[in-house]
Length: 186
Image 1 (cartoon, rainbow, N blue to C red):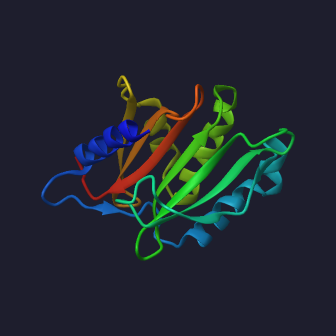
Image 2 (cartoon, rainbow, N blue to C red; image 1 turned 90 degrees about the horizontal axis):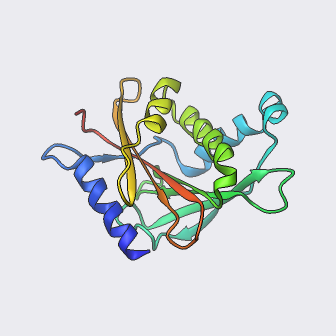
């Protein structure tokens, strides 16, 4: 797990390191407001007809995984209402101002990949990322041995979004996405 995190942080630094580049929150709102914007989409009547998702309440936890991003994170589980157990979790990392600095989607098994992709689309919609940019992030993951990454500049949000994907370090199957942002334009 530590090796994965070290490689993850090196790639983050490579994607956002220039003299003028700075990490930006992915959402300019607090975690509670951001989670509400996600659940408003998920629990809408039209969405529930297509994908009857259930998202648990977010619980505040100490961020021991990536303390460079923020001291605390919030986590909730998700899955179809018909699933016997959760399909994954969403972790919202927050900065000192309690704004969402990064979002991590964990999918417990490859069999739930489609639902994790739908959830990624919901999160990017809640962030105000254009659908074309979200699709670009997913379809242009540059595969590495351990971690894949993709970058897109969002004119609407005036920030560069970095998506990283990799296997779950503590499980034999499944994967995880991490979405972060910076002011780097190229």
